[in-house]
Length: 124
Image (cartoon, rainbow, N blue to C red):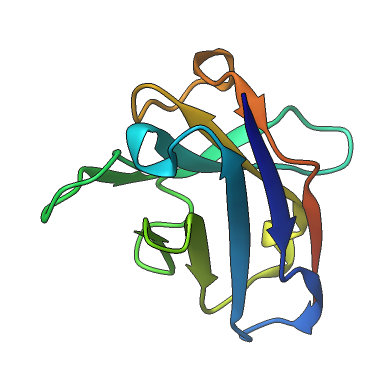
């Protein structure tokens, strides 16, 4: 079992930056690939970013909509994964969820463990 708790969301203006954190507890954090997803009102949950389990050069992948603006990273010593979000746009408004799984994939169904989510609202 892995427990995930997100933090760092809030209300920001377009163009601002925000850093989300996801703290994990339970089974060894370094054994899981970690990802961020988001869900806007009335829309399905969608992939944002993923990072592989560990290593000096982890595999990282981003959704096209956030490529170049968002950065995912992890600190295995702190059992935490981060999502740095720059140049935020109103369309980035959503509940952001972190997820833990065995592989750094992009599908919602690929992940067993989910956090409760943190709201990010970007005003224009």
